[in-house]
Image 1 (cartoon, rainbow, N blue to C red):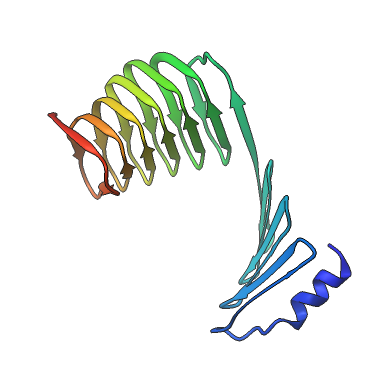
Image 2 (cartoon, rainbow, N blue to C red):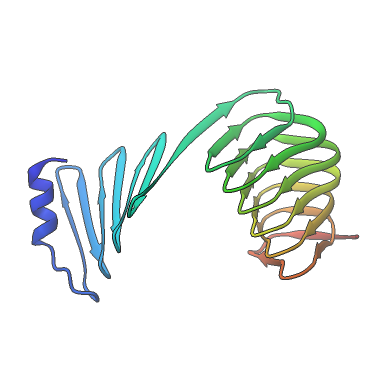
Length: 206
């Protein structure tokens, strides 16, 4: 990072309630509530209470004390896909795919999986989440006896999609949905919840 950027950060007010934004030569420096954010066209650096996060288009690196976590972001564009399993701390984006299988899409552990403009067909479970995983479905068609099955502390987000089949939420899982057509009612157990952001249609089937 250039010396003048560091000097710029040091000159900013650092009071807890103050918020200051300075833009110079394509670099934006923002301070608020003890947090500092530096943005360029391709990189964002954030500091907060001793932790530092560096975000680029392909990688996110977070340090907190002696612990460093590196997340690789991958975007795949394809017309046909076998069943997929996303695990670990991965952030995966898939566009324009057609999935076919039994349990077709699995998201586990801390995976964040975004699927756009795709078709997910299943003979058992189309989308299955466990652990702390997040699945985002944008403009997708999901078909299966069980379309979505979520447990643990997982999050499912659907936008502009069609979901045909049972939707089963358990544990502390959440479904956040907008502009989506569901053939069935959403079944919730435990502390699972549904956040209806509007524009949705829910069927009567269980």
